[in-house]
Image (cartoon, rainbow, N blue to C red; front, side):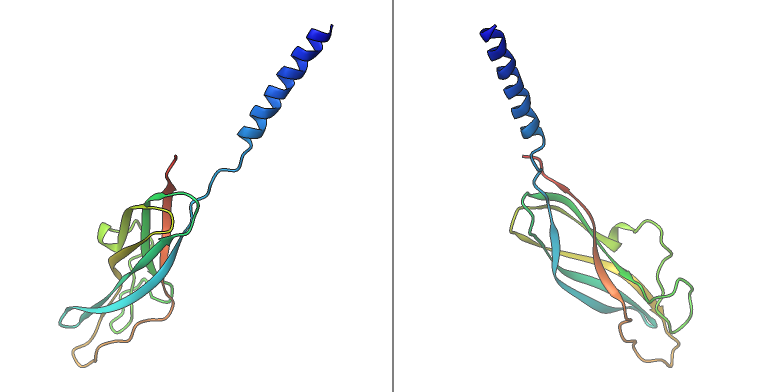
Length: 147
């Protein structure tokens, strides 16, 4: 009888230990933008575009990979109007409109850059434009590296 009780206690201890291990919290990945700069670039004689560059830091507990960074102009129009900033309607970003950082280890920082957040076409008599309001760089996604 005592050996049966010991066996049951041993089995329950093993099951409890395994369930505690299974419930252990997974380490999380986290990346933040530490620097960002928007650059006004003249594409053609009367056409301007906005590019972006900056840095991202891994502040999480694990290494990350395939970090996708892109930009948005929340105050720009989707209609082509001369003298106003315009964006491409919300479709899949082209490869040059995003940057994919392959790997960032914990605590490290990597640079990013991409082109064409927004465009503007000016009349011949207009001077170069100012940057629009509500420009932002966004980390679209990343994957954590399993140890």
